[in-house]
Length: 329
Image 1: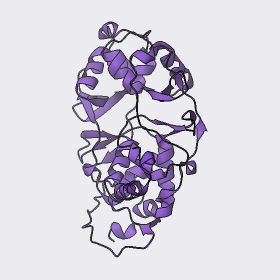
Image 2 (image 1 turned 30 degrees about the vertical axis):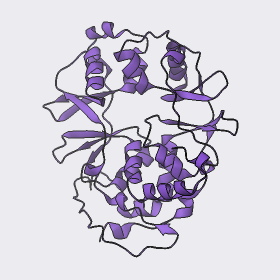
Image 3 (image 1 turned 135 degrees about the vertical axis):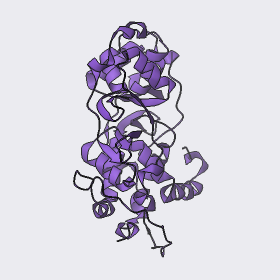
């Protein structure tokens, strides 16, 4: 049976509905006058990976995240007692309660933060939601399609999934089929990873991650068997108050985490979306049929790929009809 034939159409109106369809949380933020140390300790205590930063007027100024921490503080050596105002740059993207969900999806193209602050009419942050909430919403919207494509498990992991020819179908008024749900993961742009059989130091791993523009280090055996992984979260939790010069003496093997879930490059975008929705993972590793790691996938990578198809086209159509002051991306 054609994979495309398993796709159930969804109403365009669902994707045009307002942001309030997502689960919203308290609008917790960081103050621009905090130091990097204060911001880091707050995020560690509350277990946040990223937060919006507001200025003295309570307006959204930018973001502080563990990704930023890895690149700017651990790698570049910015002093932890530096005020956020000296290192955080303004992010011009804005989201309001009345914005359509298509705009939210589009903003995933332009920033890597996991948190999405929601602004009120006065421009102040009133809510937050996270990328996982977008994934949860998409899994509900595409549920019939995802159920038809099935979930990846141990029994079917190596089943080859044929690529479709994407034949044109008669358009359905008011409904759409998301064809790139049945694209193989090899087409999705993910992030690089660093694989090594050598037990590097923590500092060497930090340097490799930043210089290779990667977001995961894998310690392997024989180039294939994954012993464990290191991510920005592990580095942040263990070394937020350490100087990188002191980390050349610490072996990375003492700080390894368990490898995340694996997906084959032949698996479908829909399969990956279901997997992210089911286990709330931040990342998964895409491998070839010999289990050699190829890239890391984050939920935002799938959203960006979905935006490359009809979802992006719908947003451009909607954006062109909006008043000019509401066309923020």
